[in-house]
Image (cartoon, rainbow, N blue to C red; front, side, top):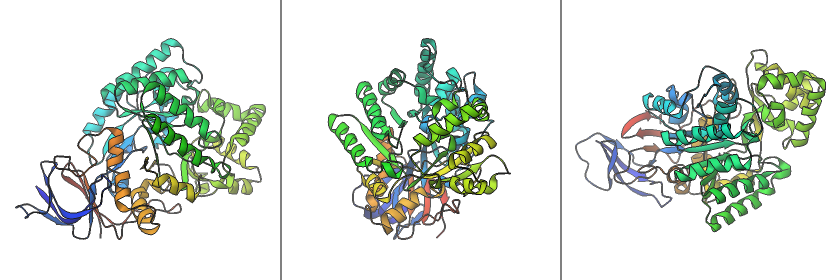
Length: 502
């Protein structure tokens, strides 16, 4: 047994906190209230907040979660994270193991040497890991497609579609929490309505979650959103819009309409919600700005096109026509080579100026020099829009964190203390109980997790204790790997997994 004594109980429901005790026994919450301490170890929580363990509904720690690399999340109070987002999962390989690594390496943080044949094998690996942070995988549509057809774009043949659906079905039945799409990433970006609808119906039939990185968050935001709402309407699936935002200054005005359409869909009875990280900047791979057709066939084919003067010119023109951000808004955060490591932390515009070329030419040169392995941080949205998203009742708060060979986005190390410190305490955008709900009870409900996400008698003893007056992120864009302060104690299934510093 373990007693957490005298803390302020934020139970994850969004209700007002109350002061009392929490008794853990056998990995579960045995008692809540004010009572005499039994004969067991006691942790004095006077003046501290006692909350459910934080749940990161959207991360990309698929590989690191199996390697006991939990410090980035444990120090933030996270006890569970959902991996396999944006269409990228570490399975299934099919007959395309190398292509799977090429497809997912830029987001999953490793270019080669990983992959599982099936979701069942990946889940078995999760069970064998140390379990300090629970990994809950989604089946990634992009990875499923690669397993069936490699890096080829375009419609699937009927037999390929049957294999794709069979792999998705097997992944869901093995225990995946749902299915994700990444419709800005090739080859998943070439999927048509029929392909996506068939998969969404599979998800709906099993009562699981469909999450989507939509086709556009810029000028095409509303069209992309309507596509996903239509899929949810036709299939009956539960829809989670990943990292909703209006990216690029010219598109900031679209956010209000996007939120209205989500609210209208909810009023219609469609189960749709969304999530976002508490930062104005996002992070991805530089190839996301290229036209999808340029990526058909994988990196080797892309590099051939970039060496062909005519093809390169067409790629440059299409990239410029579709670009929502300025090149000065896009900062290099990771590269593969030592030769270009000096460019980490510089904007594409700065690289272009130093080399005496245009922004798009600098971007294409970098992609060619690094064999497409370039990660970036991009300035996406206004502070006003970020506030509207974070405070919306349909929003869960996520990290979307991933590892790079360079400087990661500070969200990897700081998301949840940033929410509790900067957003709640300093800016006053929401109450602490609302913020706790957005990272505990709400994501647990989206995932359909039973017996987790709330502090209730009989629920699993996943608990995070923090100092509400001092919790904060120290991670910045310049020094993104600094650990946060203020997280005092993290417990998963009744076992202490992290003791923080004062």
